[in-house]
Image 1 (cartoon, helix red, strand yellow):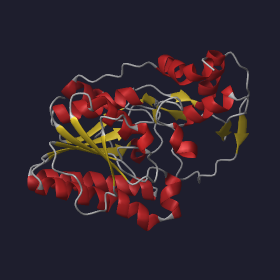
Image 2 (tube, one colour):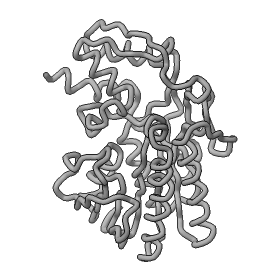
Image 3 (cartoon, one colour):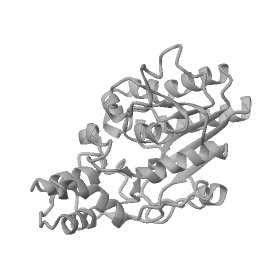
Length: 307
């Protein structure tokens, strides 16, 4: 993607800042963030930062492409304040896309979630039935339906990307998320400091861990191909939490045992396993994950090895 004016909402957050910094050398990039989870320290000097909420009027939507990543992005955030979760994740999406449409932008790429597949050990294709068990999942499902509305009614291309367990590590732009960071980042930081990482239940839950660099490439390809509809972004491989801790120990040359704790999330809503079927994205754009899980673990652990 070159010579475009681009808006990234949630642009100072984890995925948003990686995307904004990736695009900035060849494009005019505006990152909007209200500072709830994001920090402008994640952004390079060539990214224009605007402190604003996606609920605001007069957003800088005079752009060629909108990447809408702003969201309250966890189960806990929505349970603390369900109405705020719905406003930010649903109304914020509608507000941003409406303003962009008024300004003549017709290409939107937005973040959905793989959580709506529920617990699945087999690769999940986009057409399989989905479920909504939490406020977070409900808000992302609503976002998908509004994306369909904008596409069908106004002819916008709206690509909803269902992310699978995005990670980078505290050496990247993930540190500011703290307790909301991916478990890989949290486990690596614990092990490197000699703390016992806490695993919910028996540690056998699995995730399709997808490195943020692969997610960023998928976002860009979705815009370049003007995709419309729903697409998975995941590797198609899953690893359990015990294996993750073991691989981190091996990479760091440590031997820190995990601690097993009771899962604070109710069992009937906890997503125990995730695994993507990324074939639709591959078939339409050529996207494939380039960073193996072994390489991803090496990247997460590298800053600690250098200390």
